[in-house]
Image 1 (cartoon, one colour):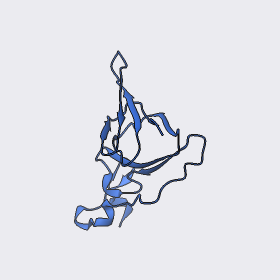
Image 2 (cartoon, rainbow, N blue to C red; image 1 turned 135 degrees about the horizontal axis):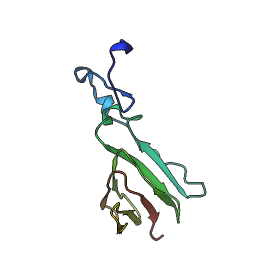
Image 3 (cartoon, rainbow, N blue to C red; image 1 turned 90 degrees about the horizontal axis):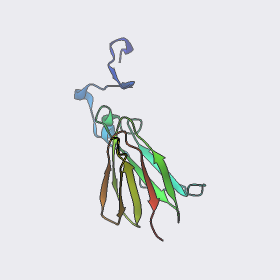
Length: 130
């Protein structure tokens, strides 16, 4: 590939769609992360650095592993919406709206539940009960 003619979006190389393959849209998160840390959690990010095909789609994913009483403290993703699926355990999640009221939108999630954190909003996840 001639770098002089390359197209970059969001600082990432855009591959010719005719050359795309399954590996450009795949990443495995089978292995649990190490939760032996002060937060009692581990985030295995799945971003454009792991899946090249995510570039410009405005979404991201992650595997979240929690120890008892673990948490992912408030944070934001300025360029991507996050969708969370609970596989096991009970999780308290929420985000703060960006309007003048700064309303907390929160819910306790159980296995099989799905929750969406809109792009750019401050959000969190905390183990609800053990």
